Length: 218
Ligand code: SAM
Image (cartoon, rainbow, N blue to C red; front, side, top):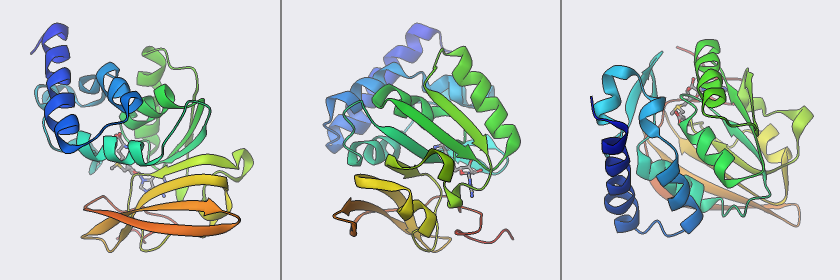
């Protein structure tokens, strides 16, 4: 197993070769990706591969996304540090930690109770205090905590869930994969003058958002 120093070298190399070389340029995103120890968010048996250019299994048929896709989604949110963020799909908690580094406060919803419990423990141990994790169907958002400056959904849906649109603050940004179960596009949505502007950004393959405004469980 690599030492912490060796993981730090791998992390720096990940930022250079997978992010900067592919035009991720926001210095706050790059610094956050340098700080957050991705290897601590993956199961022990995959830690050796934590900084590779690929997603990894985190159990329960779920994945932690490829570093480039995480950085790409974070960059599109254009966060300055003051944002109240809704994350749907906590998974390992890796992206949650990055959001906590980039914004003021993160509300994260995860459907799998065990994943929510594990990621909550991990984020506590790492000292994050600006994160709250909820168990439930994130396709319905979190009406009690709305509105949000940023919403990030890391599971795919056939269309943009209506409740999430309603919970986005004026001038807010939302990013999520939209498409069928096999292939989707990352779409960014801006709320401007109570209208929604959509931008199709990048073809991706995410696990499905299972819930009332997502896909049905099979
Ligand atoms: N961003 C995560 C990370 O850094 O590890 C990876 C998220 S993983 C690609 C997608 C997650 O969405 C899974 O953990 C899955 O259980 C969760 N999910 C699926 N449907 C959901 C729903 N309706 N509400 C909340 N979470 C959901």
